[in-house]
Image (cartoon, rainbow, N blue to C red; front, side, top):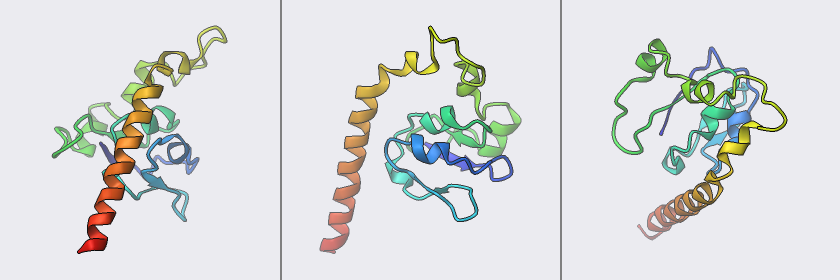
Length: 130
């Protein structure tokens, strides 16, 4: 689950806002995105993949406390690790663009986004009843 935005690293490009399939982020007025809907995060790591500044830490745990704090993850070189491991920090050759390996995530991400939307709608419906 998205755990931290490192403001000192963020360039304000909003790539994470655009990439998130469940609209977890809002654009911040100072350029740094806001984690606006944490409960919709499906831990897909798309925000981390698209962040060119390694300004996001996504903990692998979907529920409960992360095994590493954001500060520990930064110190251990885990911030942006997925992006680096998959080569998204380098230019991709035309015959093997970066998204080639991730096209298979489409149905999974769509299902996750639908589940998150239903969960979010149910939560708001429960709030309206109370």
